[in-house]
Length: 490
Image 1 (cartoon, helix red, strand yellow):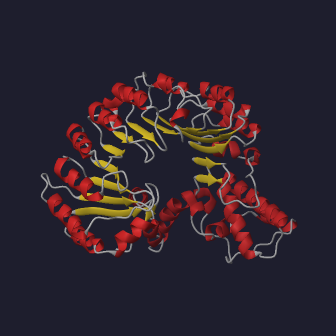
Image 2 (tube, rainbow, N blue to C red):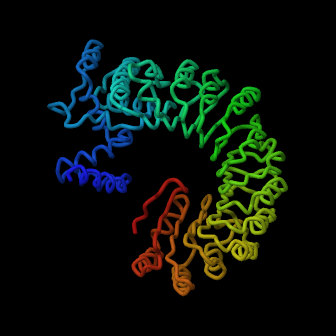
Image 3 (cartoon, rainbow, N blue to C red):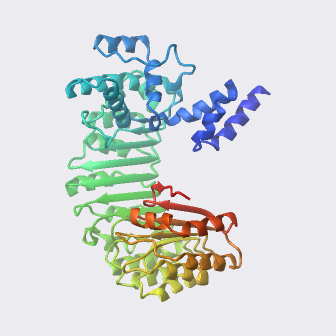
């Protein structure tokens, strides 16, 4: 019965994995609740307070502490006895770069009078012992990140020699996610390829060279599903060598690069479910004329971050694949003066659930056509201000012509401010409450500080609060962009 109780708790607490505050409260109930909660909290211990690092240092073996002591590294830890749990064994994610970054911050705060070289040496030695502890204690690591952390100052590149540590191969054999850079040693990739054959998610930053070991690692994968690859200043023949080794199991591909990147290799991944392409200029979409004619029967999500291929090529792609698509994301820098792209979305993509696009301020009829043709739309992001529709036009069109919209995102650029008047906003919410069938709305504002300030400081706040209480608004958020949330004072 006690084991059943523990198993039930684990199942329940899994739903709280992203709710750190509640999990911390659970720790205080009793030892069983504490143990279950701690295991979840410590899966990814690296993104929280420095106290986690102090705890890990306290967990170091006497041998490791002796090594640090012999190298003149003495860290006073505010822990009087050995920690309650073997915290290192709970970790399932190892971001090596972040370990270095956190240690550098910790040592800088503790040892203010220290040279850069001494700081670099101390960080490297402590990191080595912590990673040795992690590798030894973790039964099965799930995610490994060996990229350089952006906040590094004295340590230029994290070590990868832990691959030779005792029990490292046992720890890494079930690795499912790897983030790496081409600058990692070829030997590291070669040894990893002999251990890890079932990586599901692989993110690679490539600059200039592609080591043979990385090609070996990719060749060894049997079940790769998601590949995110960034390529800069790398010879085309090396990129071709790398992409030829990719297994035909990919379902998600995110590609970013410069003008040297050829896209022809994508044509063999006919099982793709998601495709994201990030190129600054449309001229960099090399070989898209090949892709436009390929049928990706499983493709559901299509994203462009900066710009899009030539319109006639993308329109042809939509003609071939649009009926399968459920989500399309066009970027804010797309040339919306050519309305053919939005009209093609309406024509060829009738089953869309989510759409991000721009509608010019004289093309309101296009938005009507999209709602009429894509009647399954549940979420739409519309660019507002400047050359695009103003908020009032966009919101009024959504109310009048959409059938299933549950989420509206309004995105602004530059110095454009949130300009809708409180009376207009209230009119929109009143009209929305009369929609049949009745739908609770999620409203998201994505913008810079100008819009945030103009939104928070005026009477719109009172209107929004009112309709949240009435249940007309299910969720309201203000974000700096689609990934970073900014909390307004409402």
